[in-house]
Image (cartoon, rainbow, N blue to C red; front, side, top):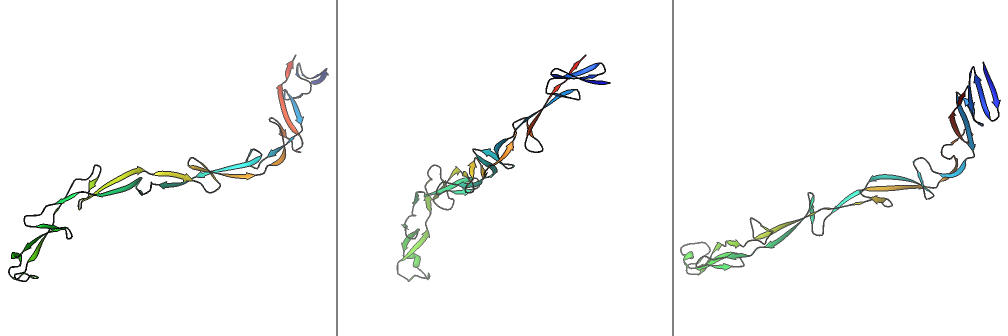
Length: 221
């Protein structure tokens, strides 16, 4: 048999030979003392889902990969993963004529004036008229400057200058670059709604903030 006894400021429930006591303003529920605290909600600026309130505005940030661009210094071209620029110079060259020949600069060959060459019935020569005999000149290339390599078929010296590729990033207009990523911001105006302080929950009517406090009941004799 249970007895409920109210003494001063405490609620006492007697069950058989045991009793449970709660402080004033608490109610006993399953051997626990429960008190519901109520307060009015506060109007606050709020944002839609996925938006964050910052400086009076609702902000949503979307991150995507920035547009990657590569470039080289002026005059360089991209070859593979490098910037390349070919320097070309002409090596000094010398010629030496066999005995009896002179070098003809305009034709790049050695020439020899000879009457014997036209003896007989050689095409293009008339008996007794001096003709020019030509043989191909052999050009001797001097060594290339330091750092250059000679082309195997000419006196051209080549040097391939290499530099790292310059890589830069950019975003679509109106977006902010952060490293190699772009940040796109969506902005909306906040709206006002009733909210509760931490630890409180808005009740079903939406007009009261409630917090449930729970402490163990005291077991008496």
